[in-house]
Length: 298
Ligand code: NAD
Ligand code: MG
Image (tube, rainbow, N blue to C red):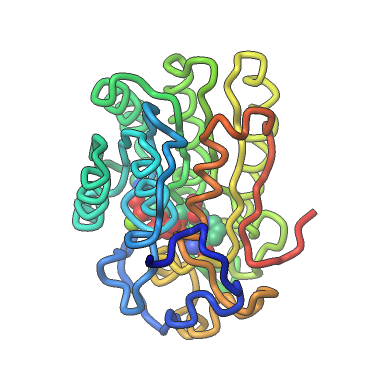
């Protein structure tokens, strides 16, 4: 039998075949164009029926962590709608194929989350085409590394907050009227919320905001039976990093600072989202699940 996420292995040796290389991608970047391919669990994620009948919307579900989560959700029995930028159609089509291969419905909803009207339309379309909504994963994000604050443009600051914070607020607000008790919202923070890099001051501060927003909202929504939680990834090999998230020359050493000594793969994040989306986590509310190779967090 080939390896799946339940196969025991030495975590320091896992993925020794994937070695990040220096690369720069324009725009949002594509999984399809990663010179060193990431593992989204295409050949390894094994579903056990943990999300049968659920209906999920994942922003940024075309690639990286969101793509791996989309594959996992489908293999656990959920129908999945994904949001993504129109320029990412190639990646989105691939994920759609993997969702339908799992026997589930896939809904593709391209658009720009910086646009408030798209945020509400994304939810409306997901609800209409899935026939409801029980799981919302706010995962889309923008990260651009800039050495000096003086060189962070007003436009970049605005776009990073619009994509990472405003869109989470707008999409969540639009989704709430559709979420029944038992539904879950999962937001994506980062190790950057706790250990901000000096070159990511705008991005890192959005990730702290996401954590705080989630913990407040979790208390507000718990009495309605809606659970809000957070996943905080460490350094994960995705197009976010090759598309300006890190200076390209830093990529070969990406993730080496973690106690495991390597970057994580999107496939290693998906089980965290599955756990928080499933009924197994019924008493887990306002939590941040760290998936970061061992970096200490408060
Ligand atoms: P990724 O590039 O594969 O995913 C990010 C997605 O965000 C893109 O696919 C894109 O579809 C979406 N997106 C960006 N701007 C958008 C916009 N204006 N409108 C619509 N969609 C937009 O990279 P990833 O690393 O899987 O990122 C997923 C999440 O994980 C992000 O929130 C990121 O901040 C977070 N994260 C990543 C890492 C890492 O090391 N890769 C670490 C911590 C947190
Ligand atoms: Mg993408």
